Figure 1 (cartoon, rainbow, N blue to C red):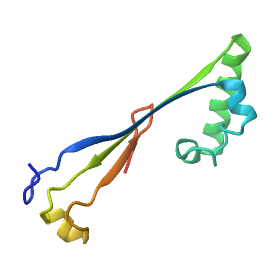
Figure 2 (figure 1 turned 120 degrees about the vertical axis):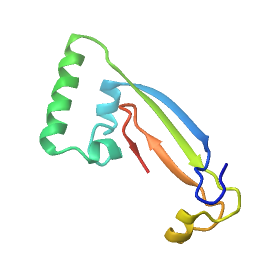
Figure 3 (figure 1 turned 90 degrees about the horizontal axis):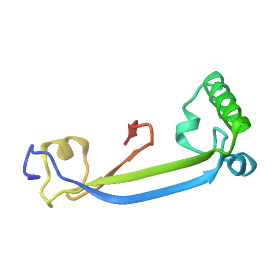
Figure 4 (figure 1 turned 90 degrees about the vertical axis):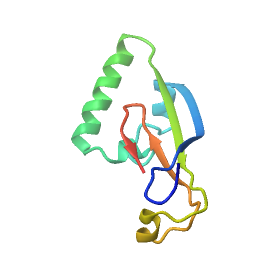
Length: 107
C-alpha cells in the first residue's frame, strides 16, 4: 500500500471526546460562531434556529452537549506518489481530516 498511485492508509491520530452542560456552554461562550468551525459555517438564520431548538430543549430539562472529535492522518511510505508530486507535497507528509459529530468531514 502507498506505492505510486495507490491509496495511502489512514491512521487514527487523535480521539478527543468531551461533554458539557448546555447552560455552562452558553455561559462560557461556546455557542458562538467564533467558538467552533462547525458553528462558523452556519448562516445567522441557521445558528439562530439551532440555538432556539437548544434553548427549548433546555427549558424541558438538563441538556448535555457531547463532542466526538476524531482526527485521522494519511501517512506515506517515503515515496512520492503521483498526487503528491502534482501538489508539491513532500514524501511522508501527513494530512489530517477532522470529522464532526454530524459526520461532515473537512480536510
